[in-house]
Length: 356
Ligand SMILES: C[S@@+](CC[C@H](N)C(=O)[O-])C[C@H]1O[C@@H](n2cnc3c(N)ncnc32)[C@H](O)[C@@H]1O
Image (cartoon, rainbow, N blue to C red; front, top):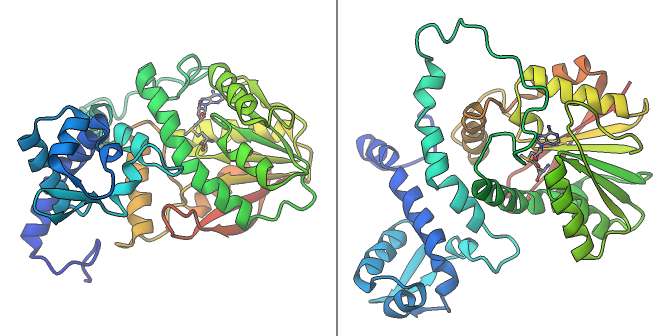
């Protein structure tokens, strides 16, 4: 049987040891974000300057920097002098595509604690598995600004992290999808409106509505006003389990369905369908699970995303699984549109469906 996972020439036990202790890498990257260390670099910079700028203990920072060299985040150009690598530069806060908030969120203690519960999810305590599951709340996520009951400071970082992923995907959607004939795009669970703002910037004939929980929609409205796109974009607050506004000729669901179980995802799709006119289109942008996993980057990220969603009560899905949800909610899947988000550089697929 061929080895699973990324190709490596390292000894299997050594490779496994690295996987076992991989949390150390995560923790170091979280420390980099907390210290805003990447922002302190000015090209090649001495560790003493970096320590002064970040208020760190020089000798201890030096040890962290050397750890980062070994991970390829930083390069040591001369003894005691360091520079960010192309990869490390993504941790700066001043670049348009920044993974800073992603590091704060995904490498932080909140996510680490969630992942610590994995074994309990796989094998629930005796009795839990067969016990009836509580019915979904009438408005899951309502009131918190996120579906996972994150504390407010984590929810704010979550939205920033989503903005990173969404900017990249938004550009790929503009490049890969034919919007000919589309006038009004409604982005359901559209967060702060990053996707729509990118669309209207590139497509002058399009107007849009972002629909999200009231407190999130309020923030989207502020963003639209600040970006000068308030005349073409509107933010509407509400609960997509109750109602989705009518009037769009294209509806978007990006990274929404994977937050929920099948019953809840079907309910969201059904609310979209009720708002739509037959013949109008829906686009789903999700990380589609390959039917068979390999050690490729696409497989690794999809599988990680799936477990991440498992911990929140959601799941990543394969294409047949999406087709089933769509047909149950009154849609016919029409085609798959390949897109390549720049940050990952790997092709993914938009699922297009038509209201029937
Ligand atoms: C994972 S985020 C995706 C945001 C955006 N589509 C993107 O890709 O950047 C899920 C979004 O669903 C919104 N949401 C959660 N529960 C909701 C509900 N009951 N009604 C409307 N929106 C909801 C969240 O506030 C959040 O903005």
